[in-house]
Image (cartoon, rainbow, N blue to C red; front, side, top):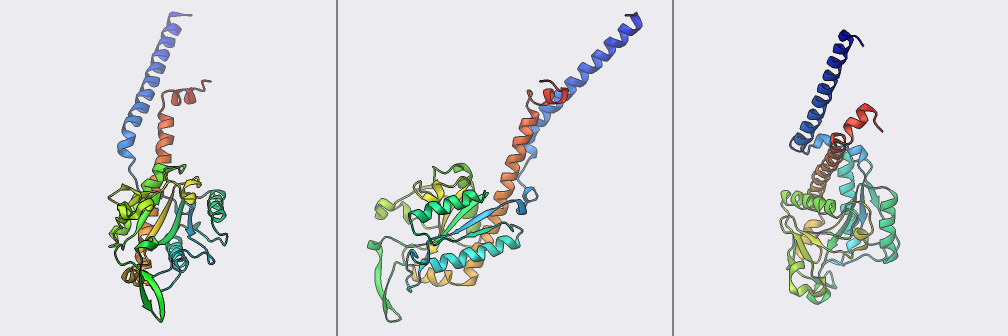
Length: 294
């Protein structure tokens, strides 16, 4: 090798090392700055790629609680779920599915979870309306029939299972939904924390948004995506029941759903993006990928 060619080779080698060092520094800088730059944004959500399954609680033959005015819970569940679906579809979440089953519990509960898993849903929400244990009910006469009521505990309640495959994400969505319901002027019921609930007493794990822990709920336990169960309000409370029967109340809940699902969709998209960026910024990944090293 001549002195001139040797000099050229060393210049080339020095430049190559400098470029590699600059590239590595850039990767480290991007990695360190990424958490600050990557903030949740509605724009990050692609509604058409996000599937929500809305489970209509109970069945026509096993309709759940009976309201203070003698109306089965299933009727309330169906109306609300249909309105929420319409609102989500109008907001661009056109893959939203209304899950209705005629299979009674307990098999019907496993069927719901299986259906949601088969649909590869991104979010599962079981829609219900609340009551109280029988020993807390009082009797009254309405339209010539004896009915039962309890006016003490109005408000919504949200439940998650710690045994769900996506427990943290379930809690995150529960928080978003609870805060969105509060933004619509609704409040959660605290009565599940009271001793009078006996074995139905639940742990309040998000006192800010009204999210309770209920591990044994099959539809939350057996689903492989983030999952919550919403008790939209108490239908044995005579005042709240009448309010929940109105399109206006269902509209407020539907608006809350659109807000919560949109924000949750964005946060999930952001989490996937951050995961990709961390992978690309890994010292073991980027240089090897760029240089073709095996």
